[in-house]
Image (cartoon, rainbow, N blue to C red; front, top):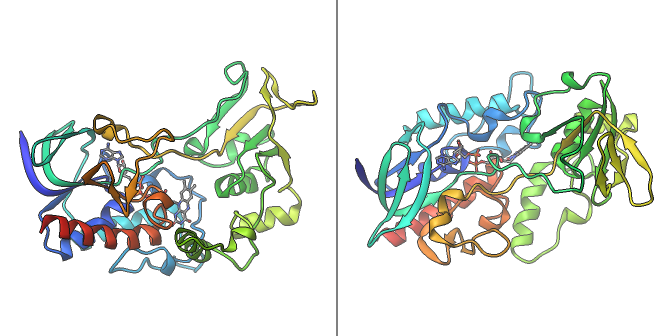
Length: 344
Ligand code: FAD
């Protein structure tokens, strides 16, 4: 069966919902396809102790503020899932799930979207599929020979499985610091980073990161000179315990652990790769828009090589901090403005 719609949003996480809010307000004919059974996007899969790095009022989508969690503090992943679930219902957003888009192709006047539940044809497609679905692990010689356990941030659920073990945590950003903070309470940890990690001052949180991303987009500098890692309370506590000391990156993985170019080695039982994610753009492959770096050139969020396609929520390249709740919200407003003008 083929269905026609003016605007098809692929992905029903925070970015897709923010687009839906503005499309609804604009009176557009649209649908949102989401591959998951339930609302919440990537937040459904984050580890339970994860806390946002901004207060609720700075982590909200348009129209409805995220409630401050009972007892105060920054919201958890579960609070965020509850908020997105309520948001979708409150604005009666037309999310169809579970539907996974496999391929977006050029048709004559419309883009054709092939899914596991039939075909859609749309005048405009907004791709908002996030990054969680493409965990990135860098290649190191010997990686396949390691006899211990390896996992990525995406598979981390909490510190308990690592109790009493020797754990190497790799990566210099927020997830590494947060995971290290809690794993170090039950395990013997080592932290390896490409560059010396830099903690932001205690009074700077995600609000300032958003301002920084906006300034960078406009060609300015910002708090980037101060650091990269938000000092959320567990990270501060780990810093005060003295466990946030990082080693430079190793050059090789051995069956028992890792080794550095000067010949020193470290034995470990577990490697946790907190090495980030890449945009989930596989469904766009038939459009052949990817540049050598793997990203798609955009003007605003519109793909330069296919103006009927918008990319929303993947990172700064698709809008200032657009892979955060507040950034996705602001970018979605501009995207829908552009989409409405295209439809007209
Ligand atoms: P997602 O949440 O991934 O949603 C995309 C949706 O699209 C999913 O439901 C997925 O199933 C679906 N989908 C994917 N492919 C297809 C397809 N082919 N067809 C149909 N559906 C598809 N941000 C903050 O604002 N504050 C924070 O404190 C914060 N902390 C973070 C901590 C960690 C560890 C991580 C990883 C991220 C954090 N972020 C934070 C960043 C950000 O908010 C999330 O990455 C966010 O989930 C991105 O939302 P999204 O809607 O773009 O993508």
